[in-house]
Image: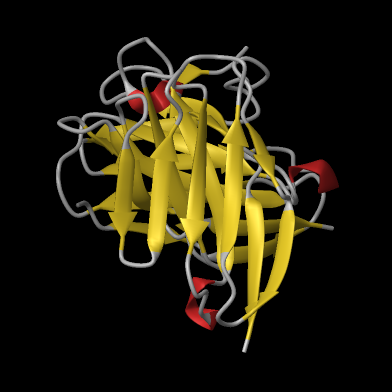
Length: 114
Length: 113
């Protein structure tokens, strides 16, 4: 299984600012994903981070709000732009083990927007 | 849109009791995964069930996939405080790639010593 590290683990931000979350994997992986877990809600897929090309966003999520970078096969960033209190959530990075289709998650980044 | 309904949403029990968590859908899934998430951590995969009717055991945890592959259950025997956490079920669609996972809202379990 892959070891996934996320930074920051938590942050408190002011409305209107932006925050970039980093995800580092200890091995090269093809598929990296970003999820959001709002309080009391399920995990929702934001986008698939593609190495060497633009991320693929799910319905309801756009690049201007959640720009994603994937410079190589072990690293990705998610930026939450122009934050509002509604963006307060846990943001999770995950990778897929292709042989089994199982997902492995980072510990998450808990974001609170005041 | 595939939806997964988990029940109960919250469960608080005494140490030593048994419990069952349910995950139901009107859709058919090619496989179903169960995760446990502790506060401040990401979800950790417990098991994947693939075949209709399949039963998998992981120590005191028993997972069952419904015959029609639309539902699943997680049964915990003699619950311990270490079992406390959020239990999530996630179904994989018929398309390729697990990024098509649909997650339930989770069952928050508290086991009181």
